[in-house]
Amino acid sequence: MRLLLTSDTHVPARARRLPEALLTAVDDADVVIHAGDWTDEATLDLLESRSRRLIAVHGNNDGPALRARLPEIARAELGGLRFAVVHETGPAAGRERRCAARFPDADVLVFGHSHIPWDSTAPGGLRLLNPGSPTDRRRQPHHTFLTLTAEDGTLRDVVLHRLPARP
Image: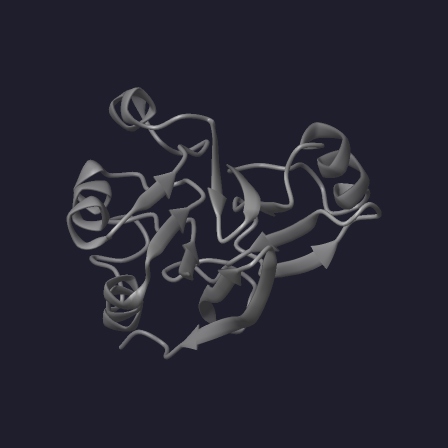
């Protein structure tokens, strides 16, 4: 099962539209996971229409219309793994311990908010993944998103995609 992970798209504040490379990856994915901070419903509508399956949550910058359509936490079993999705996880210090305690029934936690790509494993085995942002790199050198394969209870081919700078 091919997964695409993205977060913090912030359209139209940080970009007028989603990058073409991200949309191509959406088309290739079996499941798209978005960890919040859409900021507009049109982007949600676009990903819903292009995705075979979309799993998504709202973020701190999402208004009432998006919050009415999206949960704060989403869960799904994909490729034999239990996924949880949330926007915020708090500060980097102590993140693994905090998230393992908050999501004891998950194998993989996808989160956003910081715009900083993250891939770590908590004691006990919870994998934490943050895809960064495809539109707002903040202090990071690149706009990013993640792809991976979930199959037979394992993650493989976890790739952080660096997008070219916008003109």
